[in-house]
Amino acid sequence: MGADGRVNERIENYTKFWEKDSAKDTETERDNRLNNYTDVINGYYDGATELYEYGWAQSFHFSRFYKGEAFLQSLARHEHYLAAQMNLKPGMLVLDVGCGVGGPAREIARFADVRIIGLNNNDFQIARARKYTKRAGLEEQVSFQKGDFMKLSEIFGEAKFDAVYAIEATCHAPSFEGVYGEIMKVLKPGGTFGVYEWVMTPQWNPSIPSHKAIAHGIEVGDGIPEMRPQSACIDALKTVGFEIKHEEDLADRPDEVPWYYPLEGDVSKAQTFWDYFTVWRMSWSGKIVTQSTVKVLEWIGVAPKGTYDVGEALKVAADALVAGGRQKLFTPMFLVISNKPTSS
Ligand SMILES: C[S@@+](CC[C@H](N)C(=O)[O-])C[C@H]1O[C@@H](n2cnc3c(N)ncnc32)[C@H](O)[C@@H]1O
Image (cartoon, rainbow, N blue to C red; front, side):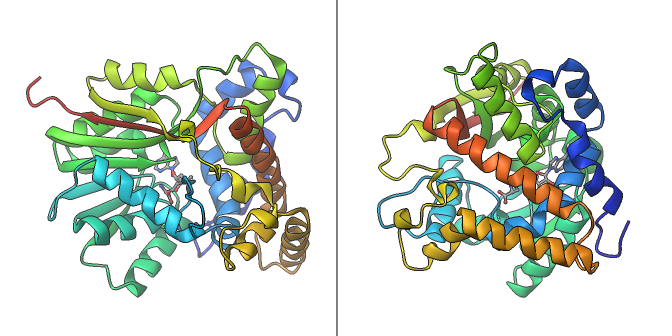
């Protein structure tokens, strides 16, 4: 492992976990990814984290947009919405499952006046999360723990948190039941779990090759061992004992500006002046500039080897996400609010 927490070898190995052609990507490759999920996901985020921060923000998720709404404002509003739906109250102890570099944790801590522990299995991201949180003066309120979300109860013990949320992270789990079951254990009785889940919508049919190709593009481009249908998310929550209070695909709202617009790279759709730069970075010319720079940085040894290939995977992701969004086959914002029963 390098001094910054990244492991070059796993970045270089990342793309080998998939067959390029979705028709040739079979259960064998999928099972290999599920069995090696830690290497798959850490390889991806070791390569992708700086690209995410440069191209997107410190919050690694999507959001809905209102007309004229600035990109960063919309990300923050999406976080506030989750906190509001979960009814977070000042002083609560909250767990952020798969916390990235802590963008949402810092925002929700300020918004809801709660204490947050961010859990993440990626050393490089944890180090950056701590640095940004110190810089924001939020160290007393927001802290970070390295660990696998499939082992939450081992890490924290049972019934520790008043509330738990996960933003676009639990789709990386080798099984929904596994991660939701662990969340159930670490929640106090009566506690709330709120999630923005990445799922394929009920319109998705994996036996249609073009549908399968979209899921495959999202998997390889985003470090997800296996994309699953919406029903799998709900079934898993119920199986582990959650009481579902609200479920809604927010991508289904009749928004004039769709959630995937920044990925389309069409600068004419930017909602504010500053957002031109964000959208440009996603345009064909922006991607050429980024990837050429990454190539040079890799060559001179500043960026780890394999970062360029992960960048290429991100381009595949953008196309698949936009296609999935336009055809309503995929959503990154399946919102579910559920409770742990008060007595079991
Ligand atoms: C798309 S990012 C979202 C990050 C954050 N929720 C945000 O919105 O900025 C997914 C996150 O899940 C984390 N993650 C994936 N698998 C994990 C695991 N098994 N245990 C802990 N964290 C994991 C990744 O390291 C990454 O930080």
